[in-house]
Length: 446
Ligand code: GLU
Image 1: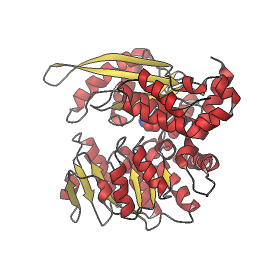
Image 2: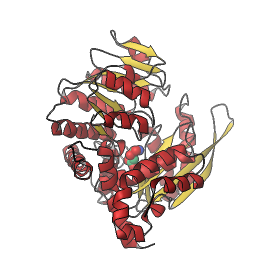
Image 3: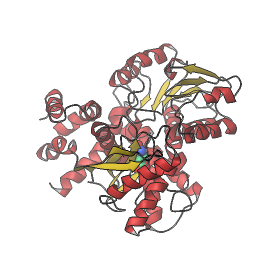
Image 4: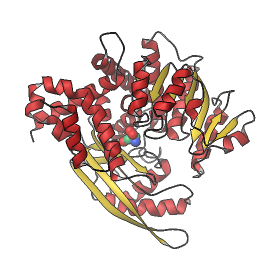
Protein backbone atom coordinates (compact mmCIF):
# COMPACT_ATOMS: atom_id res chain seq x y z
CA UNK A 1 0.00 0.00 0.00
CA UNK A 2 1.20 3.48 -0.82
CA UNK A 3 1.13 6.28 1.77
CA UNK A 4 1.10 9.79 0.31
CA UNK A 5 3.43 11.56 2.73
CA UNK A 6 5.93 8.71 2.84
CA UNK A 7 5.99 8.43 -0.94
CA UNK A 8 6.39 12.18 -1.41
CA UNK A 9 9.14 12.45 1.20
CA UNK A 10 11.16 9.83 -0.70
CA UNK A 11 10.49 11.57 -4.02
CA UNK A 12 11.72 14.87 -2.57
CA UNK A 13 14.82 13.22 -1.20
CA UNK A 14 15.59 11.83 -4.65
CA UNK A 15 14.84 15.10 -6.48
CA UNK A 16 16.25 17.91 -4.38
CA UNK A 17 15.73 21.50 -5.53
CA UNK A 18 12.94 20.60 -7.98
CA UNK A 19 9.93 22.16 -6.20
CA UNK A 20 7.79 22.48 -9.34
CA UNK A 21 8.23 18.81 -10.18
CA UNK A 22 7.39 17.84 -6.61
CA UNK A 23 4.27 20.06 -6.71
CA UNK A 24 3.06 18.49 -9.97
CA UNK A 25 3.80 14.97 -8.74
CA UNK A 26 2.07 15.52 -5.38
CA UNK A 27 -1.11 16.66 -7.09
CA UNK A 28 -1.27 13.60 -9.35
CA UNK A 29 -0.24 11.12 -6.68
CA UNK A 30 -2.79 12.54 -4.21
CA UNK A 31 -5.51 12.19 -6.86
CA UNK A 32 -4.75 8.60 -7.87
CA UNK A 33 -3.44 7.00 -4.67
CA UNK A 34 -6.80 5.51 -3.63
CA UNK A 35 -7.32 4.00 -7.08
CA UNK A 36 -3.79 2.56 -7.00
CA UNK A 37 -4.19 1.12 -3.50
CA UNK A 38 -7.45 -0.56 -4.54
CA UNK A 39 -6.03 -2.08 -7.74
CA UNK A 40 -3.76 -5.11 -7.17
CA UNK A 41 -2.15 -4.94 -10.61
CA UNK A 42 -1.03 -1.33 -9.99
CA UNK A 43 0.40 -2.32 -6.61
CA UNK A 44 2.15 -5.43 -7.96
CA UNK A 45 3.58 -3.35 -10.78
CA UNK A 46 4.94 -0.67 -8.39
CA UNK A 47 3.21 1.73 -10.70
CA UNK A 48 3.70 4.95 -8.70
CA UNK A 49 7.43 4.37 -8.22
CA UNK A 50 7.76 3.79 -11.96
CA UNK A 51 5.58 6.60 -13.25
CA UNK A 52 7.44 9.41 -11.44
CA UNK A 53 10.77 8.41 -12.93
CA UNK A 54 11.59 9.83 -16.40
CA UNK A 55 12.66 7.18 -18.89
CA UNK A 56 15.50 9.43 -20.03
CA UNK A 57 16.85 12.93 -19.34
CA UNK A 58 19.12 14.52 -21.93
CA UNK A 59 21.12 17.64 -21.13
CA UNK A 60 23.39 19.33 -23.62
CA UNK A 61 25.42 22.47 -24.25
CA UNK A 62 24.20 25.08 -26.73
CA UNK A 63 26.87 27.49 -27.99
CA UNK A 64 25.96 30.34 -30.32
CA UNK A 65 27.23 33.73 -31.41
CA UNK A 66 25.34 36.95 -30.59
CA UNK A 67 25.17 40.03 -32.85
CA UNK A 68 28.26 41.47 -31.16
CA UNK A 69 30.22 38.37 -32.16
CA UNK A 70 30.40 37.19 -28.57
CA UNK A 71 30.05 33.49 -27.83
CA UNK A 72 27.08 32.63 -25.62
CA UNK A 73 26.51 29.38 -23.76
CA UNK A 74 23.12 28.00 -22.76
CA UNK A 75 21.84 24.70 -21.49
CA UNK A 76 19.50 22.55 -23.56
CA UNK A 77 17.34 19.69 -22.28
CA UNK A 78 14.90 17.05 -23.37
CA UNK A 79 13.07 15.07 -20.73
CA UNK A 80 11.69 11.86 -22.30
CA UNK A 81 9.33 11.04 -19.47
CA UNK A 82 7.00 8.26 -20.52
CA UNK A 83 6.47 6.43 -23.83
CA UNK A 84 4.01 3.75 -22.69
CA UNK A 85 1.20 4.86 -25.00
CA UNK A 86 3.15 6.48 -27.86
CA UNK A 87 6.20 8.49 -28.90
CA UNK A 88 7.28 11.21 -26.47
CA UNK A 89 5.33 14.34 -27.28
CA UNK A 90 5.53 17.79 -25.77
CA UNK A 91 6.84 21.28 -26.31
CA UNK A 92 10.13 23.10 -26.00
CA UNK A 93 10.29 26.07 -23.63
CA UNK A 94 12.83 28.87 -24.04
CA UNK A 95 12.84 31.02 -20.92
CA UNK A 96 15.59 32.30 -18.68
CA UNK A 97 14.10 30.55 -15.63
CA UNK A 98 14.03 27.10 -17.20
CA UNK A 99 15.72 24.42 -15.10
CA UNK A 100 15.65 20.66 -15.26
CA UNK A 101 13.02 20.74 -12.48
CA UNK A 102 10.75 22.98 -14.58
CA UNK A 103 10.96 20.63 -17.54
CA UNK A 104 10.39 17.58 -15.36
CA UNK A 105 7.19 19.14 -14.03
CA UNK A 106 6.05 19.99 -17.54
CA UNK A 107 7.02 16.56 -18.90
CA UNK A 108 5.18 14.86 -16.05
CA UNK A 109 2.00 16.90 -16.65
CA UNK A 110 2.28 16.13 -20.34
CA UNK A 111 2.01 12.35 -19.74
CA UNK A 112 -1.52 12.66 -18.35
CA UNK A 113 -2.61 15.48 -20.63
CA UNK A 114 -1.58 13.54 -23.72
CA UNK A 115 -3.32 10.44 -22.42
CA UNK A 116 -6.52 12.46 -21.93
CA UNK A 117 -6.53 13.56 -25.58
CA UNK A 118 -7.30 9.92 -26.54
CA UNK A 119 -4.44 10.08 -29.08
CA UNK A 120 -1.41 7.75 -28.87
CA UNK A 121 1.20 10.14 -27.47
CA UNK A 122 3.66 9.68 -24.61
CA UNK A 123 4.92 12.55 -22.49
CA UNK A 124 8.05 14.66 -22.87
CA UNK A 125 9.25 18.23 -22.61
CA UNK A 126 12.40 20.13 -23.41
CA UNK A 127 13.85 23.56 -23.75
CA UNK A 128 16.57 25.87 -22.65
CA UNK A 129 17.43 28.69 -20.26
CA UNK A 130 17.91 30.84 -23.38
CA UNK A 131 16.06 34.17 -22.93
CA UNK A 132 14.44 35.32 -26.21
CA UNK A 133 13.57 38.75 -24.75
CA UNK A 134 15.31 41.50 -26.71
CA UNK A 135 17.08 39.11 -29.07
CA UNK A 136 17.26 39.85 -32.79
CA UNK A 137 15.81 37.40 -35.32
CA UNK A 138 19.37 36.54 -36.39
CA UNK A 139 20.32 35.67 -32.80
CA UNK A 140 17.23 33.51 -32.43
CA UNK A 141 18.11 31.76 -35.68
CA UNK A 142 21.66 31.02 -34.55
CA UNK A 143 20.49 29.76 -31.18
CA UNK A 144 17.80 27.50 -32.71
CA UNK A 145 20.27 26.07 -35.20
CA UNK A 146 22.78 25.20 -32.52
CA UNK A 147 20.04 23.79 -30.25
CA UNK A 148 18.74 21.50 -33.00
CA UNK A 149 22.22 20.40 -34.09
CA UNK A 150 22.35 18.53 -30.78
CA UNK A 151 18.65 17.72 -30.21
CA UNK A 152 18.24 16.00 -33.60
CA UNK A 153 20.27 13.05 -32.29
CA UNK A 154 17.52 12.12 -29.87
CA UNK A 155 14.23 12.78 -31.69
CA UNK A 156 12.32 11.34 -34.66
CA UNK A 157 8.75 11.18 -35.99
CA UNK A 158 8.12 7.85 -34.21
CA UNK A 159 10.44 8.47 -31.26
CA UNK A 160 9.99 11.95 -29.87
CA UNK A 161 8.12 14.85 -31.47
CA UNK A 162 8.78 18.27 -29.88
CA UNK A 163 6.66 21.38 -30.48
CA UNK A 164 6.40 24.92 -29.15
CA UNK A 165 5.77 26.25 -25.65
CA UNK A 166 6.65 29.51 -23.92
CA UNK A 167 9.20 31.39 -26.06
CA UNK A 168 8.88 28.92 -28.94
CA UNK A 169 6.38 29.78 -31.67
CA UNK A 170 6.16 29.40 -35.43
CA UNK A 171 9.39 31.29 -36.10
CA UNK A 172 11.49 29.14 -33.76
CA UNK A 173 9.88 25.90 -34.98
CA UNK A 174 10.79 26.99 -38.52
CA UNK A 175 14.42 27.62 -37.67
CA UNK A 176 14.70 24.32 -35.81
CA UNK A 177 12.88 22.29 -38.46
CA UNK A 178 15.13 23.84 -41.13
CA UNK A 179 18.20 22.64 -39.28
CA UNK A 180 16.73 19.17 -38.71
CA UNK A 181 16.05 18.84 -42.43
CA UNK A 182 19.51 20.07 -43.33
CA UNK A 183 21.20 17.48 -41.13
CA UNK A 184 18.87 14.51 -41.53
CA UNK A 185 17.57 15.01 -45.09
CA UNK A 186 14.09 14.10 -43.95
CA UNK A 187 10.76 15.81 -44.47
CA UNK A 188 8.98 14.06 -41.63
CA UNK A 189 6.71 15.33 -38.91
CA UNK A 190 9.51 15.53 -36.35
CA UNK A 191 8.20 18.81 -34.95
CA UNK A 192 4.63 20.05 -34.75
CA UNK A 193 3.39 23.61 -34.99
CA UNK A 194 5.02 23.83 -38.40
CA UNK A 195 4.17 26.53 -40.94
CA UNK A 196 1.19 26.02 -43.23
CA UNK A 197 3.29 25.59 -46.39
CA UNK A 198 5.69 23.02 -44.93
CA UNK A 199 3.61 20.42 -43.12
CA UNK A 200 1.77 22.35 -40.42
CA UNK A 201 -1.83 21.67 -39.49
CA UNK A 202 -4.55 24.25 -39.85
CA UNK A 203 -5.91 25.37 -36.45
CA UNK A 204 -2.68 24.40 -34.61
CA UNK A 205 -1.77 28.03 -33.73
CA UNK A 206 -5.24 28.62 -32.29
CA UNK A 207 -5.71 25.15 -30.82
CA UNK A 208 -4.74 25.65 -27.16
CA UNK A 209 -6.90 28.74 -26.72
CA UNK A 210 -9.80 27.37 -28.78
CA UNK A 211 -9.68 24.08 -26.90
CA UNK A 212 -9.77 25.90 -23.56
CA UNK A 213 -12.91 27.75 -24.61
CA UNK A 214 -14.54 24.54 -25.87
CA UNK A 215 -13.79 23.08 -22.47
CA UNK A 216 -15.09 26.18 -20.67
CA UNK A 217 -18.25 26.01 -22.77
CA UNK A 218 -18.84 22.44 -21.56
CA UNK A 219 -18.23 23.43 -17.92
CA UNK A 220 -20.73 26.28 -18.15
CA UNK A 221 -23.31 24.19 -20.00
CA UNK A 222 -23.00 21.52 -17.29
CA UNK A 223 -23.86 24.28 -14.80
CA UNK A 224 -26.80 25.36 -16.99
CA UNK A 225 -24.97 28.57 -17.74
CA UNK A 226 -23.60 30.25 -20.86
CA UNK A 227 -20.43 32.10 -21.90
CA UNK A 228 -22.56 34.73 -23.62
CA UNK A 229 -22.24 38.09 -21.89
CA UNK A 230 -19.78 36.85 -19.25
CA UNK A 231 -17.08 39.21 -18.04
CA UNK A 232 -13.72 37.44 -18.34
CA UNK A 233 -10.03 38.09 -17.83
CA UNK A 234 -7.15 36.25 -19.51
CA UNK A 235 -3.61 36.45 -18.15
CA UNK A 236 -0.74 36.56 -20.64
CA UNK A 237 -0.72 37.95 -24.17
CA UNK A 238 1.00 35.14 -26.10
CA UNK A 239 -0.23 32.56 -28.50
CA UNK A 240 -2.43 30.80 -25.97
CA UNK A 241 -4.04 33.99 -24.63
CA UNK A 242 -4.63 35.11 -28.21
CA UNK A 243 -6.49 31.90 -29.13
CA UNK A 244 -8.52 32.12 -25.92
CA UNK A 245 -9.52 35.76 -26.48
CA UNK A 246 -10.48 35.00 -30.09
CA UNK A 247 -12.78 32.13 -29.15
CA UNK A 248 -14.15 33.96 -26.10
CA UNK A 249 -15.23 36.75 -28.46
CA UNK A 250 -16.86 34.15 -30.71
CA UNK A 251 -18.94 32.88 -27.77
CA UNK A 252 -19.93 36.42 -26.81
CA UNK A 253 -17.91 36.59 -23.59
CA UNK A 254 -16.27 39.95 -22.90
CA UNK A 255 -12.55 39.78 -22.08
CA UNK A 256 -11.72 43.00 -20.23
CA UNK A 257 -8.09 42.36 -19.25
CA UNK A 258 -4.88 40.73 -20.48
CA UNK A 259 -1.42 40.89 -18.89
CA UNK A 260 2.33 40.72 -19.30
CA UNK A 261 5.35 40.62 -17.00
CA UNK A 262 5.17 44.45 -16.81
CA UNK A 263 1.56 44.66 -15.52
CA UNK A 264 -1.93 44.34 -16.92
CA UNK A 265 -4.22 46.08 -19.41
CA UNK A 266 -7.76 46.93 -18.38
CA UNK A 267 -9.95 47.52 -21.41
CA UNK A 268 -13.58 47.88 -20.35
CA UNK A 269 -14.65 48.10 -24.00
CA UNK A 270 -13.37 44.51 -24.40
CA UNK A 271 -10.21 43.11 -26.02
CA UNK A 272 -12.50 41.47 -28.52
CA UNK A 273 -12.32 43.41 -31.77
CA UNK A 274 -10.32 41.84 -34.63
CA UNK A 275 -7.93 44.82 -34.56
CA UNK A 276 -7.15 44.42 -30.86
CA UNK A 277 -6.80 40.66 -31.11
CA UNK A 278 -4.42 41.06 -34.06
CA UNK A 279 -2.41 43.59 -32.05
CA UNK A 280 -1.70 40.91 -29.41
CA UNK A 281 0.27 39.03 -32.05
CA UNK A 282 2.21 42.17 -32.94
CA UNK A 283 3.08 42.74 -29.30
CA UNK A 284 4.36 39.21 -28.97
CA UNK A 285 6.37 39.36 -32.21
CA UNK A 286 8.19 42.48 -30.99
CA UNK A 287 10.28 40.26 -28.60
CA UNK A 288 9.93 42.95 -25.91
CA UNK A 289 7.69 40.90 -23.62
CA UNK A 290 5.56 43.88 -22.46
CA UNK A 291 1.86 44.81 -22.76
CA UNK A 292 2.11 48.54 -21.91
CA UNK A 293 2.03 49.70 -25.60
CA UNK A 294 -1.55 48.35 -25.90
CA UNK A 295 -2.83 51.27 -23.78
CA UNK A 296 -1.01 53.78 -25.97
CA UNK A 297 -2.54 52.33 -29.11
CA UNK A 298 -6.14 51.88 -27.95
CA UNK A 299 -7.85 54.85 -26.32
CA UNK A 300 -9.87 53.98 -23.23
CA UNK A 301 -7.60 51.09 -22.27
CA UNK A 302 -5.63 51.50 -19.08
CA UNK A 303 -2.21 50.06 -18.26
CA UNK A 304 -1.72 49.11 -14.61
CA UNK A 305 2.02 48.66 -14.07
CA UNK A 306 3.52 46.02 -11.79
CA UNK A 307 0.17 44.60 -10.63
CA UNK A 308 -1.31 41.14 -11.11
CA UNK A 309 -4.40 40.85 -13.26
CA UNK A 310 -6.32 38.85 -10.61
CA UNK A 311 -7.47 42.03 -8.85
CA UNK A 312 -9.79 42.76 -11.79
CA UNK A 313 -13.37 41.71 -10.95
CA UNK A 314 -14.67 39.06 -13.34
CA UNK A 315 -16.97 36.06 -13.65
CA UNK A 316 -14.49 33.82 -15.47
CA UNK A 317 -10.73 33.85 -14.96
CA UNK A 318 -8.44 32.18 -17.47
CA UNK A 319 -4.75 31.68 -16.61
CA UNK A 320 -2.70 31.70 -19.81
CA UNK A 321 0.79 32.77 -18.78
CA UNK A 322 3.02 30.81 -16.40
CA UNK A 323 3.07 28.14 -13.69
CA UNK A 324 2.02 29.33 -10.23
CA UNK A 325 0.88 32.70 -11.61
CA UNK A 326 -2.25 32.62 -9.44
CA UNK A 327 -1.65 31.99 -5.72
CA UNK A 328 -3.81 31.71 -2.61
CA UNK A 329 -4.05 35.47 -2.11
CA UNK A 330 -5.03 36.03 -5.74
CA UNK A 331 -7.69 33.35 -5.37
CA UNK A 332 -9.14 35.13 -2.33
CA UNK A 333 -9.37 38.38 -4.33
CA UNK A 334 -11.10 36.65 -7.24
CA UNK A 335 -13.54 34.94 -4.88
CA UNK A 336 -14.29 38.19 -3.06
CA UNK A 337 -14.98 39.84 -6.41
CA UNK A 338 -17.44 37.13 -7.35
CA UNK A 339 -15.55 34.83 -9.75
CA UNK A 340 -17.79 31.97 -10.89
CA UNK A 341 -15.44 29.78 -12.93
CA UNK A 342 -11.67 29.39 -13.13
CA UNK A 343 -10.12 27.82 -16.20
CA UNK A 344 -6.40 27.09 -15.96
CA UNK A 345 -4.96 27.35 -19.45
CA UNK A 346 -1.30 27.67 -18.45
CA UNK A 347 0.39 24.51 -17.20
CA UNK A 348 0.01 24.42 -13.38
CA UNK A 349 -1.05 28.07 -13.44
CA UNK A 350 -2.55 27.90 -9.94
CA UNK A 351 -0.79 27.05 -6.70
CA UNK A 352 -2.26 24.23 -4.56
CA UNK A 353 -3.53 26.90 -2.10
CA UNK A 354 -5.44 28.65 -4.90
CA UNK A 355 -7.02 25.43 -6.11
CA UNK A 356 -8.01 24.55 -2.56
CA UNK A 357 -9.63 27.96 -2.11
CA UNK A 358 -11.71 27.61 -5.30
CA UNK A 359 -12.74 24.07 -4.52
CA UNK A 360 -13.67 24.95 -0.94
CA UNK A 361 -16.15 27.48 -2.37
CA UNK A 362 -17.39 24.90 -4.89
CA UNK A 363 -16.26 27.09 -7.77
CA UNK A 364 -15.74 24.92 -10.84
CA UNK A 365 -11.97 24.79 -11.44
CA UNK A 366 -10.62 23.24 -14.66
CA UNK A 367 -6.94 22.21 -14.44
CA UNK A 368 -4.49 22.93 -17.25
CA UNK A 369 -3.88 19.35 -18.18
CA UNK A 370 -7.53 19.08 -19.20
CA UNK A 371 -8.34 22.61 -20.35
CA UNK A 372 -5.16 23.24 -22.35
CA UNK A 373 -4.90 19.82 -23.97
CA UNK A 374 -6.24 21.18 -27.26
CA UNK A 375 -2.78 22.35 -28.30
CA UNK A 376 -1.09 19.01 -28.04
CA UNK A 377 -4.23 17.33 -29.40
CA UNK A 378 -3.95 19.24 -32.67
CA UNK A 379 -0.22 18.48 -32.62
CA UNK A 380 -1.27 14.83 -32.60
CA UNK A 381 -3.55 15.53 -35.56
CA UNK A 382 -0.62 17.24 -37.31
CA UNK A 383 1.39 14.03 -36.81
CA UNK A 384 -1.43 12.01 -38.40
CA UNK A 385 -1.59 14.35 -41.40
CA UNK A 386 2.19 14.22 -41.84
CA UNK A 387 2.19 10.41 -41.64
CA UNK A 388 -0.41 10.17 -44.42
CA UNK A 389 1.18 13.06 -46.40
CA UNK A 390 -2.11 14.92 -46.49
CA UNK A 391 -3.53 18.15 -45.16
CA UNK A 392 -6.98 18.29 -43.67
CA UNK A 393 -9.43 21.17 -43.99
CA UNK A 394 -9.65 23.62 -41.08
CA UNK A 395 -13.22 22.55 -40.31
CA UNK A 396 -12.14 18.90 -40.15
CA UNK A 397 -9.37 19.68 -37.63
CA UNK A 398 -11.62 21.99 -35.62
CA UNK A 399 -14.40 19.39 -35.41
CA UNK A 400 -11.92 16.79 -34.19
CA UNK A 401 -10.56 19.27 -31.62
CA UNK A 402 -14.08 19.95 -30.35
CA UNK A 403 -14.79 16.23 -30.02
CA UNK A 404 -11.52 15.67 -28.16
CA UNK A 405 -12.26 18.49 -25.69
CA UNK A 406 -15.75 17.10 -25.10
CA UNK A 407 -14.26 13.63 -24.46
CA UNK A 408 -11.82 15.12 -21.95
CA UNK A 409 -14.65 16.95 -20.23
CA UNK A 410 -16.72 13.73 -20.04
CA UNK A 411 -13.74 11.83 -18.63
CA UNK A 412 -13.28 14.49 -15.92
CA UNK A 413 -16.96 14.26 -14.96
CA UNK A 414 -16.88 10.44 -14.97
CA UNK A 415 -13.82 10.18 -12.71
CA UNK A 416 -14.21 13.41 -10.74
CA UNK A 417 -17.87 13.55 -9.70
CA UNK A 418 -18.15 13.85 -5.91
CA UNK A 419 -21.02 12.53 -3.77
CA UNK A 420 -22.44 16.06 -3.40
CA UNK A 421 -22.47 16.48 -7.19
CA UNK A 422 -19.49 18.87 -7.34
CA UNK A 423 -17.08 17.99 -10.13
CA UNK A 424 -13.48 17.77 -8.97
CA UNK A 425 -11.91 18.31 -12.39
CA UNK A 426 -8.41 17.99 -10.94
CA UNK A 427 -9.04 14.53 -9.61
CA UNK A 428 -11.07 13.57 -12.67
CA UNK A 429 -8.35 14.59 -15.12
CA UNK A 430 -5.58 12.97 -13.11
CA UNK A 431 -7.39 9.65 -12.64
CA UNK A 432 -8.59 9.40 -16.25
CA UNK A 433 -5.17 10.34 -17.67
CA UNK A 434 -3.35 8.06 -15.25
CA UNK A 435 -5.39 4.88 -15.75
CA UNK A 436 -4.63 4.55 -19.45
CA UNK A 437 -0.89 5.04 -19.00
CA UNK A 438 -0.75 2.78 -15.93
CA UNK A 439 -2.64 -0.01 -17.73
CA UNK A 440 -0.27 0.26 -20.70
CA UNK A 441 2.76 0.11 -18.38
CA UNK A 442 1.39 -3.03 -16.71
CA UNK A 443 0.78 -4.70 -20.06
CA UNK A 444 4.21 -3.78 -21.43
CA UNK A 445 6.12 -5.23 -18.47
CA UNK A 446 9.21 -3.63 -17.01
N1 GLU B 1 3.49 23.07 -25.12
C1 GLU B 1 2.14 22.65 -25.35
C2 GLU B 1 1.62 21.98 -24.11
O1 GLU B 1 1.95 22.38 -23.01
C3 GLU B 1 1.98 21.85 -26.64
C4 GLU B 1 2.82 20.63 -26.78
C5 GLU B 1 2.73 19.97 -28.16
O2 GLU B 1 2.02 20.44 -29.01
O3 GLU B 1 3.43 18.96 -28.31
O4 GLU B 1 0.82 21.07 -24.16
